[in-house]
Image 1 (tube, rainbow, N blue to C red):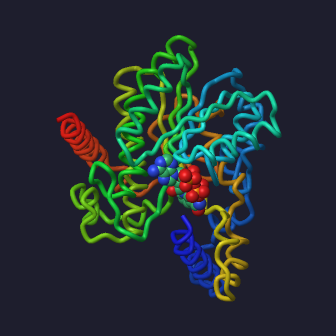
Image 2: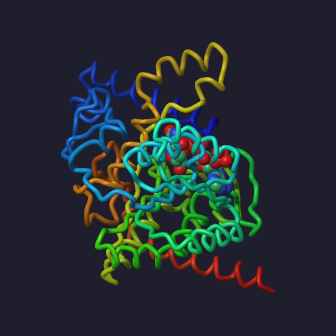
Length: 360
Ligand SMILES: NC(=O)c1ccc[n+]([C@@H]2O[C@H](COP(=O)([O-])OP(=O)(O)OC[C@H]3O[C@@H](n4cnc5c(N)ncnc54)[C@H](OP(=O)(O)O)[C@@H]3O)[C@@H](O)[C@H]2O)c1
């Protein structure tokens, strides 16, 4: 995520600088949204950009029965690890789905230091590999546990063009395709759990505001999975758009089936990560010093995921996009139902083809 974060930080700094400059020059309407973000002013949900995951889950609107089971992908660092820590603290059974078992166990140890009775399992998954996703699902399903919450959080940004085992461009394979397959394979369990318990199942796709950088003519399925004319930032943005379209189309299908499971997409905010420690040098340090006033802490970054996963305000809400713990607009391309259906059909066909190829 490091190189991507530099791109994001530069964009954030430019974006806010321009808005501040225009407003000072009287050339723009008062920067209501920007000031709201910077001041952390609460939106209709009662929360805002400065709300932390701890605060959201402490609130009475987050009243839920304990021992719900939640799977969190990419919970070995950053936003995912913080989400796991806070949800475990609130009594949920957590499955840390990670590709690095050493890191997963360290995250579990840290959770246990704070919450010694927390029920935390670690299971291996590499989201860029269909075989690994299948292994993960059969291992999880063989445990006979219920499943109420699935947080599709793992994310990859790669400057280099690389391919997965199934010969799919790596960013697309990890951020989108892997989560699509994982969700497909766990959906029946989630529907069944919701029927048995009466508690709504919730799926959260961790997307990004960067999805809005994708232009319609640049969103071509074949180019994305083949890695044609690869550009790391574009591939990342496309995968994050695909996360939202996936949520929209699956929400439509779940509603049509009357299934008591929702799916939404979220933008966590631009989050302070290890980037600040990893990048040394006067220019980057100065950039980060300024940008750090605009970035979120990891706990603020995990708040929207926790809000959508647990709040009673989001009960029954499906196919929506959230940021700063409030529902908000995604790009017009992300709202295009026909684009979402097209992506769904292409994805399904690609997965079936690759699974057939693997079986022969
Ligand atoms: N940070 C931001 O500013 C920002 C902004 C918008 C959206 N997001 C989104 O937020 C999510 C979390 O990102 P983060 O900022 O917390 O970054 P991070 O600290 O780099 O976390 C990414 C996680 O994804 C995991 N992962 C990567 N490839 C994987 C694979 N093939 N199989 C399984 N797990 C894999 C990583 O595992 P390892 O520990 O093994 O590497 C790590 O746990 C991502 O979806 C990202 O796109 C972040």
